[in-house]
Length: 517
Image (cartoon, rainbow, N blue to C red; front, side):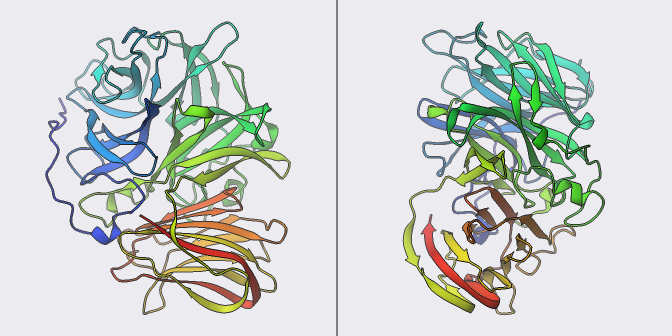
């Protein structure tokens, strides 16, 4: 029988590549992490669980790591929550607050937290070679967990049935639990429902649709008001795909439509005429044109497995994703940790081009040391404050491109002219992020890339919020209607940055540079 290493965390001291350790983005102290799991708010605390190898810095020994926060910015790493064992690896899933104790794992005075996760069964076990859905519960606010003795609670005898996202659906005849999971290799979302989290019945299926060139993973389903109007509520179905995303490798797409507690029905404007099955590499290959017509959570290479928190007050919808790409995930040049999370993003539905579309805003701590360079005409290059060790930088800009052929920003500039370049081409309305000439790009053949997204001007203005951390950049364009996220691994001592205009003049209507840490 295949075994899982014992649940003892290594005592490796944080060292190796400290200049790449993020100031804002969560990383495990000295181990590997990937997909966020079990995101929940409970009794004043946000809980981030995630796929974790407690014993190494590459994928393996899959267990649920755990971190907590009261502000979604500063995270405290906790002990491993749900550990793999000789019978199963603990794959992705979700957590609900069972307010009515429908599961029977708690009581009315102390409702349990219930984790619904995928058991990936090992050889020489009763469910060998299958993935099925199991339960664990906590009666101490998520700090310790007990696996249900009746696991698994749902199996299809499938090798690729995984990633359950569970929520309570408010049916007029009484609420019930809905599970959204995937048959990954079939590019199919499967919907189940239950009264008690233990017994499940199949409700419906969806897919394949739109980007279908790789496995579908980590689905999510939630309602949002359109333009803040609760009388115009639509449902958003998130489906992550690997490979076959628009920038190559891993990425997250979404659909907007209606959900009646049984069936998700996408809006016609959310669907392509037929699925795109071609898998493309970064910016090239079969199917790229079709992929650019899909609806993407992020147009960069490093935002995957994004799902939302449950039980958040005031019906806020908060999402977080894995800051990595399966093309090169196990090779990132960081030590002793490998991989991290994106910033938490608050999402909303706004009408764009006549259809509801997601807009995303990063959750940030208060900004300090703000330097404003507003209201100036620019042709050429203007130096900006340096990107300082131990701090992240937030750039807020409103640019009227005017006669400029290109405008944008250069980050982590070095003496040889290398930099990460954020470029906007007004003639075609395309925003790009080029990381081919900055820092370490040679650790994997697929890493160097130029990623781009369509970004039309709004009343002649390009609006950007750029979050620059020690090994990543997240670009939120036009109020977060378009987002580009990429990892970058600058060399020690490359702190310079600038704003540039080429081939004409532009107006910097607003330019503010702040530090956070």
